[in-house]
Image (tube, rainbow, N blue to C red):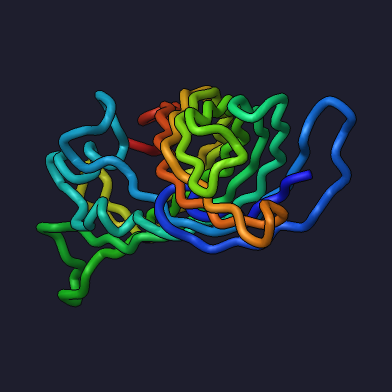
Length: 219
């Protein structure tokens, strides 16, 4: 029976895990933890990306994509069928609000025209991991790949400027679930006779969602 502390879904974290009964042919474990999310930068995003369009339109907004970096929490159920192959299903949650203003426009009183850009993601993942050194070792590096169903919500709320340069208040919201790929690279260190453990993992998830564009009020 092996159950470990898991850490770092995307970056570094510390987690605790509780022992759960093992099936006759497989080893089960459950881990929870926290980590960090680093979104792609301006030059690496998909064509038509709403954040890129907001920064490069004829009347651009002023904000930093890097401020969408934030924390996340996660839980994952793992099933090891032998010492080198493990299958897991997990759920994580991330949410971040980034303030913005129009770069070149102010209102009649000379104040900024401000908005809040908010992104929420809750990926459900299925991953197969391969442990080259096997599970009895004191240091267990691994690689893995799988699929992710990324439930997301993106919104822009605040004051906006129309084609006549009139200011209006509004809130634009879109939600969806997008399929994507996930790749992991990490290492696990068993603790207390392989009953608990500590994990450090880098996770790369790629997916693309559709806000609906101008029809829904987004660039």
